Image 1 (cartoon, helix red, strand yellow):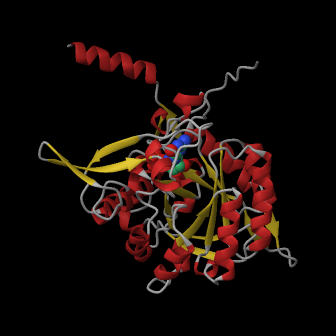
Image 2 (tube, protein in one colour):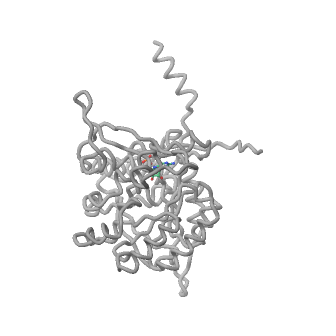
Image 3 (cartoon, protein in one colour):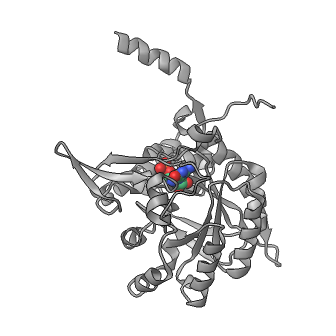
Amino acid sequence: MRIEEDIKLDYSDVLLKPKRSTLESRKEVRIERRFKFYHSPKIWEGIPIMTANMATCGTFEMAKFLAPHKIITTFHKYYSVEQYIDFFKEFNNPNYIAYTLGSRDEDISQLQEMIAQNLIDNFSFICIDVPNGYIQKFLKTITLIRELCSEHIIIAGNVVSNEMTEEIILAGADIVKVGIGPGSACTTRRMTGVGYPQLSAVIECGDAAHGLCKYNTDGSKKGVGLIIADGGLVYPSCAAKAYCGGADFIMSGTFFSGFEQSAGETVEKEGQKFKEYFGSSSNKAMKEFYGKKESHRASEGRYTLIPHKGDLADFLQDLFGALRSTGTYIGARKLKEFPKRATFIRVNRQLNTIHEKYTQGN
Ligand code: 5GP
């Protein structure tokens, strides 16, 4: 047994220190980015935000809505090849969609079928999503998929530590998905005791990924390893903190669920409208999409009803505005400059708690 004593942080444990800035308006802050990749020869431009590959937001409807905003929809794993054939009759914007699969034999078979049907080139991204990226077989799956899809931008995860981040990139992924347990519909920490404070995971994995750099034969930089901060974003400020910590992309279910454009049933209770939000390994998802919960599995996801949030367009405007505002406070002209300009202040939670108790008591 070992105990690691150094402090690990969540988004709520820090604030950003304001810095002298020559920016005059938040309009001047650019939140689009352009990326080159470690393996894939593609170049991607857009707003580095992705939906989670969850049933409530990783949908065809969401992709149609988000692609014009230059945001990526990571599809859930439950669409069939036939459903994709229908979808691509009316959608053609590879840059802003990701095909998701797991590491089971059925997942690889469906990918092969997608390749055989010439459907996979309709996606720039392929996301290999497993709850536990530490299983050795996962690396073999990544290498196999890199061989099958040499040009695609491959995302793989989830992990929370530097050594696995490096291994995943070296095995064939371009982007590592970081986060175990921070998701709002996730009960992994409660059920298994496993997890890692999310901001520290992002800082440490980002540092490892960015340290891996590939060069072209002429000596120019081909691309570096990248990461996604996946899950645990509650407010727009969490996204800003993730970018400041070194996230290249952010991924969220919370930011894209509960809206008019989101999937999930709308429920009315005592005159108030709610919408379903549930984890990918909740009992509901396992029964609805796989027909059953296997006997060796415990649910590590929650089912919740969240208050209806209205139009996603309004939230996106707030999110983009908030990110630009963070840029003006810390003096960053581009999202790319956020980590260089960021100084995190640790917020002493214990003191806050005492303060809250004191003010409540009075
Ligand atoms: P949120 O935006 O809700 O905070 O986090 C979304 C992320 O939570 C997803 O991208 C995924 O990584 C994770 N997630 C989604 N469903 C489940 C689940 O059922 N169990 C666990 N452990 N994580 C989940």
